[in-house]
Length: 301
Image (cartoon, rainbow, N blue to C red):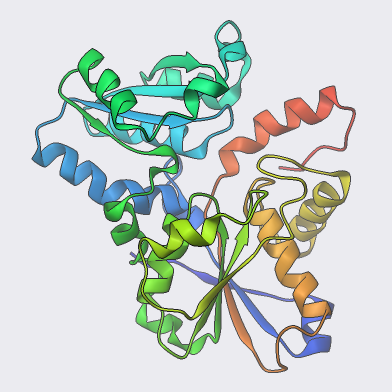
């Protein structure tokens, strides 16, 4: 599968003599794009191998993973069940673009409180789900498990060995773990956390052995799914300058972080960077609905 590494031309990059390319994983599939395609690939194969008929997974109101699992499940003949964080969504999920799309693909929802949702990794909670939905295959939140990491190890290709630095946004850690595992020894990997809190490194360490990586955790803009006017203006400006659409949850924060590090001379002149575009563009419509209510600027699509 050939994925374009799109060169980015910006004055700050020329000034600092830095080369930046964006790996357009967002163009892999119209509905299961970027890292979601990679994470689901081997999990779908395994679900078929064990003859499961249902896929159960977890996510929030704007979850790319929920939307991707719903579509991939339908495409591969599985019934899908989404355990959704937030009981308040139960009566109004129809107006949420992500959940409406997932339901259109046949996904059934189970809305739970945030307190109950925290139990999503507990064996007894998983057992209660598999008892209720028999013959099911459980995918964790964000899809991150050993098979997801295996899929994400296929993001980098031999041609990417020309880059000194590989960057990606980080949510649950599966994507960056796969990238770390497949990166060359002389390459460094930088993850840009979309979440507030410094707990991601521990999760990533479960899947990797190399030490050529680090997490930048100051570009989360307040935490998961949090945005500011500054971030929105930045995303719109990048779209205008490069014709690359970024999402506000992950890739917008990553590219903002990369360019900020460039300005601060974090990278040596001559450094070649590739940033992985992990998709997530389906969430923009729902985010714009929220921004309208908050009377904030909208993301241009």
